[in-house]
Length: 107
Image 1 (tube, one colour):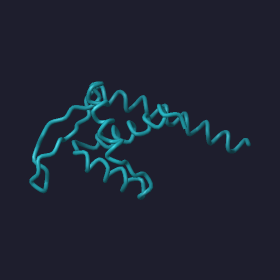
Image 2 (cartoon, rainbow, N blue to C red; image 1 turned 60 degrees about the vertical axis):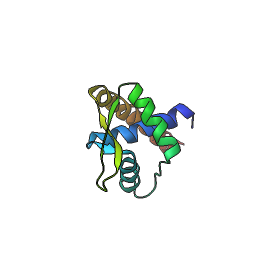
Image 3 (cartoon, rainbow, N blue to C red; image 1 turned 135 degrees about the vertical axis):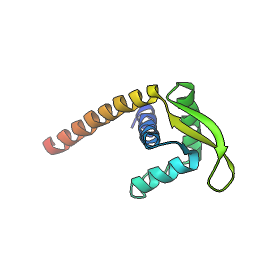
C-alpha cells in the first residue's frame, strides 16, 4: 500500500477517535486498539509525528493538562477543519473499500 494511503488511514483513525472527544496520545492508541478488536496497533513512532503534522495543518489543536493519573499530558481536540477532513477521509475510505469489495467479488 502506498505510504500516503497508510498515512491517510492513520489520520482517519486519529480523527475519528478525536471526534469522540478530547484525548491524550496514549488514550488515542488505546482507543484504536480496543475499537479494532486488538487488530490495529499504533506505535508512538508513528502517532506523535502524525499528531504534530495534523496540528500544523490545523486539523487538531493541543493543550497541556493533568491526566487522570496526575501527570502532565498533551490533550488533542478535533477542530472544525479536522471535522471536515474526517468527513472527506471517511468518504474516500468508503469508496476505496467498495472498489476492493467489487473487485474481489468480480475476480
